[in-house]
Amino acid sequence: MDKKLFYKKLAALTLPMAFQSLMLASVAAADAVMLGRFDQDQMSAVSLASQIQFIENMVITSVTGAGTVLGAQYWGKGDKKTVVDLFDMILRLNAVVSLLFFVGCVFFPRYLMYMFAHDPTLMDNGIRYLRIAGWSYLLTGISQCYLSMMKITGHAGRSAWVSSGAVVLNIALNAVFIFGLLGAPKMGVAGAALATLIARIVELFWAVGSSFGKTYLRPDLKRMFHRDRLLSADFRRCCLPILAASLLWGVGFTSYTAVMGHLGGDAAAANSVAAVVRDLMCCMCNGIAAAGGILVGNKLGEGDLGLGREYGDKLMKISYVVGIGTALIICALTPFVLRIADLTDTARKYLFGMMFIMAFYMIGRCVNTIIINGVFAAGGDTKFDMYSLIATMWGLAVPLAILGAFVFGWSIYVVYACTCLDEVGKIPWVMVHFRKHIWVKDLTRERNGI
Image (cartoon, rainbow, N blue to C red; front, side, top):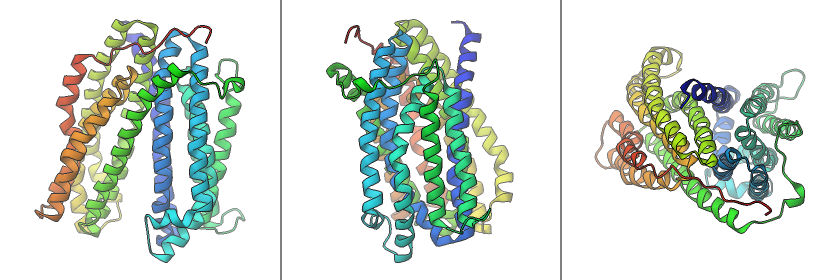
């Protein structure tokens, strides 16, 4: 293995993807800050209404994730035609998903809000948000297909520019429409929804326009509804475990938030700040996982299983370096976070303990993200993530957190540590599975003439 070439390729893919992840994490924080300054009820309503988009995003990213796994291997093999067929396939699926969420949010928002709140003020504000933002949900699935195809075909930088540009525009328009700047009306929650819609429109047009470049990939409209039975079966085998894992993870994290929320306002506030820090700190390992998965997938698709395995071994070592480095950064940032966080003395004390617990958690989070979501997924080993979440999150962390909070009366720190057990508990299991090299697999088929 040419180590210099490997690191060069990894950096070229990782940096734009990590930046893209950082920008996406920033827009949620900006929404909360701006609406919080405008009106607390409107901030809470948008936080609840955004859970609808969170669910949609889990489905969309599962579809594009499966397309990326197979697409990276076929692209490495040089089979552009199959990659285009995969492009068509994920476009069809995400169009259906986007349409369903659009109809629900625009025409039946009251029923959706009723799942998250009964308070009339929260419901009314949430309905106002969904009726406008719901139009953006119609577009998100389509633009994500284009952006995911850019990543696997050597245009990760353009994908990051498009996504990050839309985020910057979203944040700027938030300020304009929420507070009524530059002559715009002061719209509050409706302004946040309008800013999201405009940003998604720009993102879609920018992504589609980019696809007309010389070296970019475009869907084949003539084959849009062509269905290949074998390719569809391969896609389902990748996609369904990814979707199941996403749902298990999403509901599990919601459970953690609910448990901490029941321990009092100070615990909930400290946990909210810790969650923002955690999401920002995860950006680098998310970028490395996505980039590493593409590199390993390319080599496996080429049929060079030995080099694909070497790439995976190198990424495993990198995951520990990144994890330990992230833990040290969190420890170093703790005094700064405590100074800028607007918290009570009790909440600040809770946050201090949570930050150091989270530092150890991040070692497991980085290792597992890079190996499971990057290396394992590259070889189509997508079921492991689902099984590990069932065992460590739902079999260990969630039950212990619930029992500790509501039955045994454990301290805030112990309960928070229980919510971090899943990632730490995975490491031995992940390493045993990694050493089996089940993930070293060429998923491609000979499809000439199909």
